[in-house]
Image 1 (cartoon, rainbow, N blue to C red):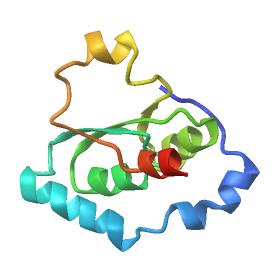
Image 2 (image 1 turned 135 degrees about the horizontal axis):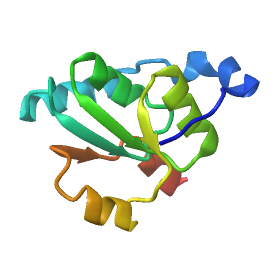
Image 3 (image 1 turned 45 degrees about the horizontal axis):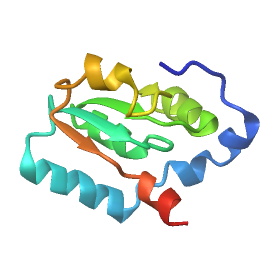
Amino acid sequence: MTSCSLPIEIRYSSRIMDYANPELLWMVEILGSHLPVAGAKVLDIGCGGGLFLSLLKDKGAQVTGIELSDSRACYASTKHRLEIYKIPIESDFWQKGHASAFDVVVTTNMFGDILS
């Protein structure tokens, strides 16, 4: 799990990273239409700053994130107090140790990085 202190440039940009845009709120609503969010075990691959997971956590979900960026993983774990791992999904850690651990797996921030 990630442990860090928040760098000044991340603290400065926290207003942007904390903005709950309509897309994220819509995604929470969509997820809730498929399963009860309270108590759901959710893994977000490429969770970025953790805002989506934070919104789910506020609704009672048990959340875990994967984020390979040091600064984003630090921000998510520090600002939102989330369980964030810097371990790629392909690793044995996930494949063997957590194969059935989650009710749902999402990728909320990853596609923007892939497409750009």
